[in-house]
Image (cartoon, rainbow, N blue to C red; front, side, top):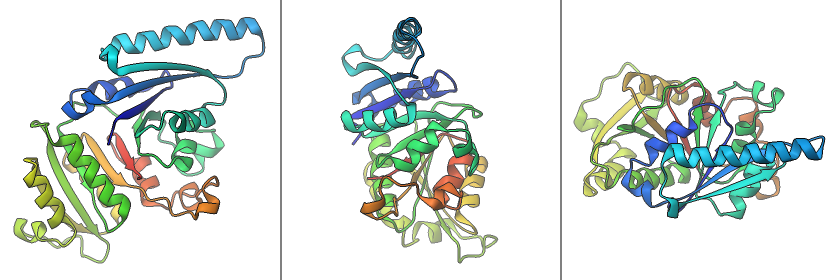
Length: 280
């Protein structure tokens, strides 16, 4: 499921630390890591040569700093527009996951400031792990998976179980936020484990020996998920992020995400931990 991972280096933020933490997970250690560094168009041949040399050193330093198995890593140095280059490279290598940093800009700010991560988030059809510049990246022990009735949510469950199946240090929280339920209503552990959406996921996790807890609450899903990330001190959040656009509009911006009204966009901006937005 994660045979090929594209790490898009921006030279800033905590993405290198995130990659180190992921490599502590046994299943992730089997992945092939492609590290991409992009050089913007230059005005002269001398400037291009300088940037090309600088980019090569950056790639070399990342491989050394992260301590990746040499047989599992490759590097790509390209010139071009970072937004389009990340998307095109992900297709070229058939990446199963894109890992990149994010400034966590809200709504239209991302577009007004030419955000690379927001552009890729809008247009890629691949799972994407975003690491905001203003969060602290920790060893991955407490993982939260927010579930609903979507196919993207089902795939997020598959991905979470794949990641954690041989990782005894992990605690998985299965979360269902029902907007029709009173958020002040307290359910017993038994009631939460029997929730129609969580129960099948819990059974799968238990069969794989993953330490799992269920949380069922009410309220606005986007805000409640972010609050639970805070309350449970979550290290990694997985969330299904379905692409609702028809096939004819796949290369167009999703207005819900542009305006910040989608759940995944709200969580991407406000969750205080790395967020893995899952698409199949």
